Image 1 (cartoon, rainbow, N blue to C red):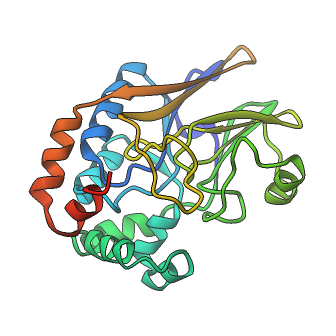
Image 2 (cartoon, rainbow, N blue to C red):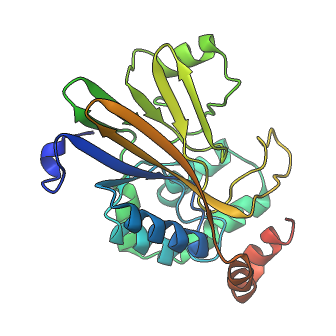
Length: 255
């Protein structure tokens, strides 16, 4: 899907500011803090790179905030699990993750699922006549693949194929990142709901105590990327997990 600035009448064509969020994982407390910061930033567009409703305690409320922010949404692997349950087994055999995904789906309405089904595989923004920005969950080809700071140049060439852009934004790893590859800036805004201290590599993750997202702006040809870490009420989040109980509480008791 290509999104032209013509679709955003409020945007000054000489400048553009977007907020990029990802990997919310039903952490409403973190998302509310990030949404407040985004509103204060006066972003013209909010792009969500997926994984909104699973693992955490408040799937529907998080989806509603995404609607309220008028996000342009990319399909993440956990979003795909909501609308295609059989897909989960190509990603993990963990009974706990399967139970969490099924629990989240049971909390969503038909309208919620239809909204998730409408998400795009990739989103392209055109900030000016000389550049384009490309956003996806994992890679342009695969929302279950990882891009990391140590991913080699040869691997990136294979992951990107013929895609080129001034900026590429990805999520999925829950690790904030900014790197350059053959002139393209590659950014991961990190995770709103479950930011990791280090790449998991099959291990149990260590969670950080803040929410993460990014602000990207372009004015007069100058590009600026701001990776943000936002404090939120961790005790309130723990209370929401406890109120939820069941499989969600068991999942978060491990951290």
